[in-house]
Amino acid sequence: MTAAMVLEDLDWGADALATIIGLAHSRPTFTAVDLMQEMRPAPHSNMVGAAFSAARNLGYITAAGYTTSTTPSRHHGVVRVWTRKEQP
Image (cartoon, rainbow, N blue to C red; front, side):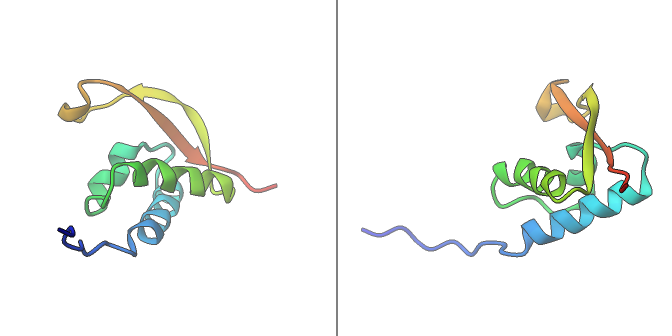
C-alpha cells in the first residue's frame, strides 16, 4: 500500500525569510515566537530553525542572546533572541 501524498506549503520558507527580515527592521529584538505569531504554521517544525539559519547566513540577522519562551507548549524553554545585523 502507498501513502497518500500530502500537499506541502512550498512557499513557507520564502515567506518566513521575508517575515524575519520584516521583524528585523521593525523591532529591536525578536524570537521564533514572534515569527510564529506573524506566520501560518510551518509544514514541519524544523523549518522554523532553518528559516532563522538562512536569514543569519544571508547576513540579515545576528544572535543577541537568549530568553525564555512565553509559549505554553515550550514550557518556558530557552529561545534565541535575534536582532538585525548592521551592514558595514
